[in-house]
Length: 198
Image 1: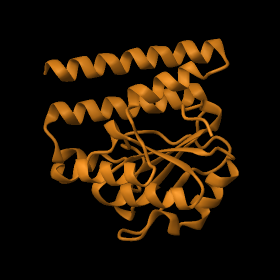
Image 2: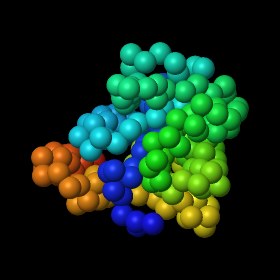
Image 3: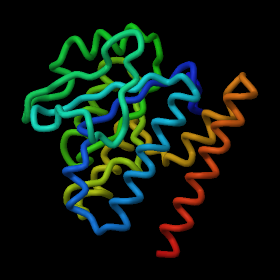
């Protein structure tokens, strides 16, 4: 098992990546989250990492999602009814297993319920699950650290978007892909610098 993110072994699971949740944050943080979801989409396209989406019935309109689906060859968007566990959608699990990619990077809304439960259950389903911290806010910020501590305790390590982009670039075998990923990594560093100065 590789400890570093490898593009050929990676896949993404985005949970309810819809802008309606951004109203919970101040404008600068909302803008940062939007930029980072876009950056993740661009980097995943460059690295040819599939993005799977789980959307609740309230978020099924695609015209304003924070990331765009990559459904060239097969569907990668799956619905789950509110209050139901993500993995109850058996078509989602089947599709993700068919990728034959063990590294699963999970992000979305919210860390303190749906995303944590999904990442923990992914371990039991055989995935090497990770949490993208920048793109997984807690609804109640007081729950952020306890949720991450619990994920760590059971083997779901956190990873920043910046670290993920760097690891994909460092482990890419294609020079053109590596160069593009390094540009996305630099863009993420710029987003972080602007956020720190705001």
